[in-house]
Image (cartoon, rainbow, N blue to C red; front, side, top):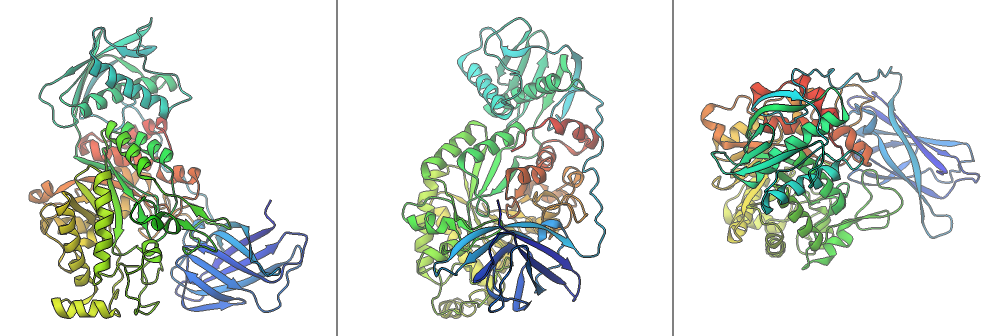
Length: 637
């Protein structure tokens, strides 16, 4: 039971971003004195700090620690209130306030940290309407639970079989493929009736696998007759066809609005070669079992790329044997740790990373499902965790607050003028290339604050030597060296769209992800880069799903409804001659807000399923109302 509670409200005055009012309630049976109060919040106090009724002792990114007025005592059942102005933003949703609270008691001389219960953020003096339905009522023209929807489907509904089983005479490869999809269905729906069986029984339907034919990568065809036949030229196509059969039978079993076909055909192939989802495990850590579950969900939706965001300011999650401190102090946040608590963190330190053995297991699991893992080590910015525990990656003469990232971190970028930076990265890349067999390593490259390194003696010398001007030409110098290091290790560079800033890198073999706004992707393609479209306005699944205050989520990119995520066309205004440069689309799941599995499910679904259909299904075959009817059947995290 919590003994203390924090309530926070917001009022719009003074302009531009108003006032955050914070109230601490003492619900214990003892007088509260000699303490500090901390909270974590995306709505941050900015320098110069403006606080009435308290002193802001420390603000590190989203972590705020306050001292009460001298001698303050709070009796049982009483409260203390203070106000914070000069905010970084105007809150727009209930999750924009405090996400966690920590009370530090100092009366005994030894600080003791205690969790504080935290309320939602509410605006003062405003009516708060409830959000409406996020999707329209579903409608089926054809009663088949297939998502993403195929290119061509011509089926006649029939009776629901007990299960699907391998046809007599199936070879070992066919049996293995069948068993794999059977196991996938069981993992995703452990409470549901099995829809696959390795043994024929009364009421089962036989499924034959025919390998070969004129199919592109991942394409397949299904012929439904007395024996159902899945045809494909590769393992991905076979798996896709079996998953589609499993989806149809599962839907027919659990919802009588759906049927299993008696006869007919499906012909299908993916729209894009890159059908991905990103997952940020730095802000909130998800263990290897959770990640494997997420991969299963991607496979069920016929997605083939997992972009694993393994490092950021908030934590380094990838074991590098050359630097054990990265996954010791660099993977731990807490009130007394080198990394301060961040969004949702409480009194108890939080810690988590993946051993190399776990990494290999996750990569193998993904490969078995036809998914390529693209690991991301986010550099040169977003590097507080590494800078905190590894010496030599920054200029020690640089003033402590020379620049701040958009997330509020001070001096958070690896110094491009220190050779120690490249020695460190060489060791990291050497271990990564052994863990991740895919062709790309993602090196981030995003959100380096303008003004970074300009107070560094080493950087100024490098700028003078190389004729570089400003932060982004320094960053481009850094990126070109990194691209060369990757090429020497047989890897290609993937990054966010800012990699192109300051002159960029050689577009040949480089893949960039356009996230800031859709037009960026077209400009990158014009510069010769291959592009994956992942605009925050449609495919960032941490964004709020409705405008109302009571809807949770982030709002910097606006409101991204499930309808928008489904209907958005990433090709947009791409000129025809540039479309070959667009390799596909992916969702991004940034986990600042995702402090629980339930919260994750509320924001990620059903939008992830909508992105999956946008990645697979041609525009003229998409149907919002059909999608709304089918998506309710799909698994969540």
